[in-house]
Image 1 (cartoon, rainbow, N blue to C red):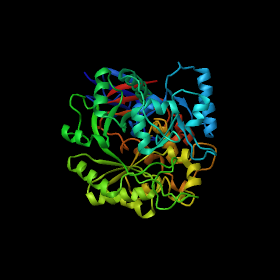
Image 2 (cartoon, rainbow, N blue to C red):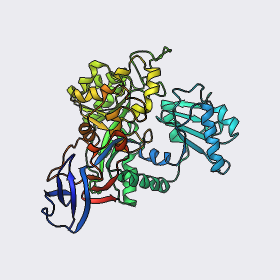
Image 3 (cartoon, rainbow, N blue to C red):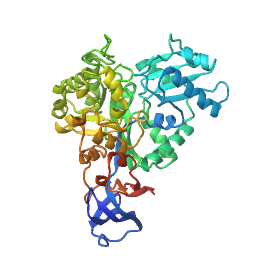
Image 4 (cartoon, one colour):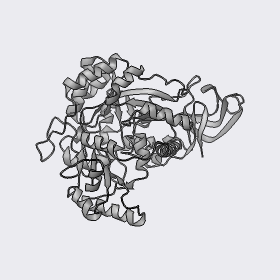
Length: 485
């Protein structure tokens, strides 16, 4: 029989000690210790807290799994320092001549110098080098790497669409290798209590995930986002957002349809009403309303819910206007800078604010420099929460680690170091942050799908720093244990 008994767990925050019995993937009974019945499999929760399983509502899974194997550049303080980090890594970990060197995670928004292909050529003459920014909106290539993909470029620093297309042209590992990396990354996610990921990879995610599932059972559910260039393909296949993909046992569903209105803060391409400090630039408008609205309308008419990338306040206004014009609900991804009058429109229009709270402490210094007159409206999670907007948390991995506890802690504390909270008026309470990190689930009841996590410590007893390191006792997906400590 497909059943599981969770013994000695506290159901919910500050909950009482209970036993929970699960049958055929759903919670069948919640009762006092020893009163929920028996099961063929028993897991002792040791007094830990039982919570809804966590959901990463925005991740780039293949890129995250690959980034875990790239040269880490998050500590780079300048373009020159970045090159030093690459050289130091290669000194300790040599690669064969001609092999593509990959690094990831640099943030150049505060650098005193500019990245350039000549810096890479001088340090590694003739060697193909590709370095990805933390936000994935900038790709810094050496001359040999440019030649590898048949391109010429004056600086080797490619932004936005150029970055995305060049990334797709770089050599990649074979599917079986990438799938192995992804499997490792999913196991790591399950070990942090994750039971679902929304995959925003810019590929045919449906085909990719069907292949992975055929090779190995998945420890998480996956929502397969539809890239802009695959809209007609998705329509021809009859895909509709939320549909379970046939033959996947409910593990794979069709995700939303992704569109980009603007760029990012670190690349200074987020599209803003005002000008970036010290410049005449408003950022970059990737998709104007006359192109955005028809795409959203076509997707919506075929059952595909739009997910619109918008970071700057002008981009968010354009996205909200498009939702109003088309008359459909959907999601705005990131929503990092909002005009005060646009906050309530999310709730009015039924638009989900899909946000990544870990970006706020990561980007506070860049925001202070480039958005210094607007930071009271930046990463406005508290304002969105108070306005009754549906919030969902993600990581945007590899931009931030795929760990919802990092997002929860950042949303509560507005800091991740020893500095005071940054605009603490925009913080959220723990209960709301947990719900946003759990796909909207805020309680556990009989009849619920048994996607669950048991934490060794009740989150209400922990500081934000403690939440980031909270020990996980077990993770359960559809009533099956996917991780146990």
